[in-house]
Length: 121
Image (cartoon, rainbow, N blue to C red):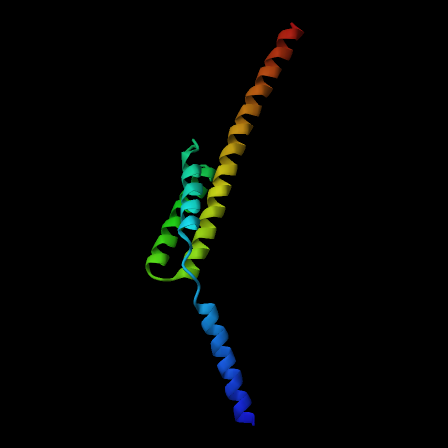
C-alpha cells in the first residue's frame, strides 16, 4: 500500500509539473498590443539619457527578448518578457509626459514671476 501511495504521489507531482511546463504561446493580439505600446513610447520626444529614454530602450529590448523566446518555444519566458516590455513602455510614456508637464509648469511659473515683477515697478 505504501508503494502505491508513493507512486500515486509521484505521478500526481509529475502531472502538475507537466501542466505548469506547458504554456500556450502568447497570442498574436497580445504581441501586437505590446508592440503598439512600445512604439507609442518610442514616438514621445524625450532627451537622450533621460529616465523616459532609458525605459523606452528597455521596453524595446524586452520586446526583442520576448520575440526570441517565442521563436525558441519558451512561451512562459516570452510572456514574462512581454509583461516587462509593457511595464517599461508604460513607465517611459508616463515619465515623458511628466517631464513635458513639468517643463510646461516651469514655463508658466517663470511667466507669472515676470508678470509680478512687472507689476511691482
